[in-house]
Image: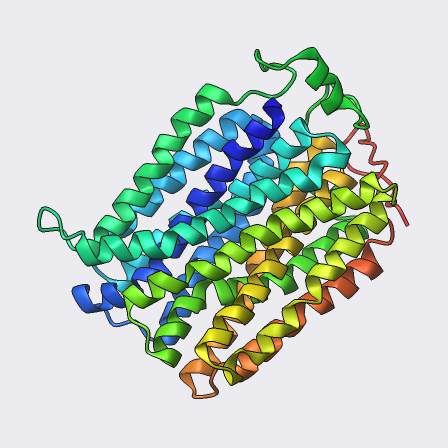
Length: 433
């Protein structure tokens, strides 16, 4: 069962990435109080935009890097980079320095999910891939669950050696990533080179998958963009991640401004939606794999699970109209549905594209998601700074996954491996209708 150990290893990396990206939203009020840096709602949106802009662009760049360097070397490189970038937040003395730190963090974390997706394509047969992506994606929930109480603990008690507690938040989370890198270098190899992989498990991994080709040159981006399936997944991710990054980055601030929570109270409850997200990761991927075992087609198994995930998201529209107990419940529904959805969307590149294109397509999909987060985040910051409140923001957020599901139905008519054949110049394969 070495392949499942590999999925857990990758899940830990994703957990660290989500712990890293939650540091600023959870520490923002302490940064303002202890450093004197003035940060409005729109400037907070700008900090998130800085992260997402670099994250989205390097999601694509990270995907290409994985296809060029290979998963083992590529993932080690980006983890070291983003861990140092996270630690650099602790050196900031102005808003501009925080912006630069967020940009650099986004550049590093942009390769995380493409690396994870590529590793799943390497290590799992088709029928297990959505379950494996569920385990990997559950790292988002683990990071989200750990972030509120751990960061709150450091903020309340971490004034060590005369250094402000908010700075220690970034130093300690950055150190975790460096420790993980040693584990990765020690334990990860592709299955064809892993010394501990049994012949039985190797045969299982290869079952139902195309044979590994000798030529592993990445397929040109221009060729992949000729397929409407590529655009369909990108647009769907643009829409759904617009809602996801809003609730991910703004939940702590929402609880503080709308319900008067202090950092201790936020730390005590903000982990609950992330726990629901973790269950969503496992349920979404597991449900699709279950449908495949019941002999449904790959197309039906993926789309039924995606539709079931999307239908939960309109619950976010009710958040501004209920008591704080139901706020946590409704956000939990939203986090569950989003991460069930995300697990399946990030599995689609492994279903549709050959292995040497998976990193690039996963990067394109992530770029689309980050751009959605930027556009909607800036729009939301504007609405909140100009007194419109959270009602229109959450109403729009609650509708986006449903629209994204319709996009997938229209632009990905059949979930099956596309017959992409590289030409001599690496350009002109006929798109599948």
